[in-house]
Image (cartoon, rainbow, N blue to C red; front, side, top):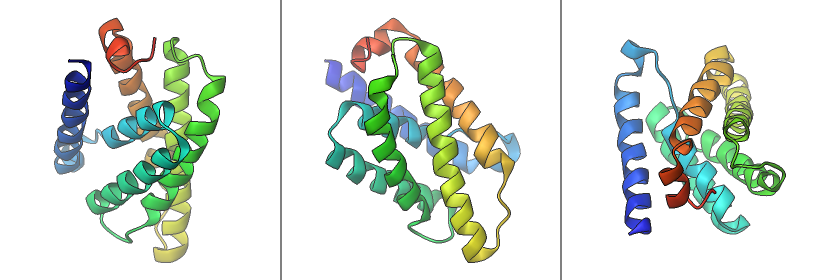
Length: 157
């Protein structure tokens, strides 16, 4: 039962990401729901599984954003490594640490991708990708994990 609810939550996050990407220009609400899945996998799984999922989720992010394939694959893989290694130092039962872990790691990942896109295509490094999106995604992850039932489903208690 717990696995079915976990899968339903992940599918809901994937659909939410599709909807957000479809209407991001009109709503200006840019939350990275796929990154929330990556954070969970990196915290709960081994290093190799985290790196594989980081690459896959990065490629999916590349597909949604368009442009050079592999930039977000690379940045999400590096972030999955750091998430896996640094989650031991955070008490994820406290919501502030969930927020900080998500926000800082997503800002780091987006900064890596933005620097690559700046040097390859000449894109500006946008503050919204490095500051606003991590804060909104961190807030969303904190709100999702603040419910005790969700913490039990995700084994973060």
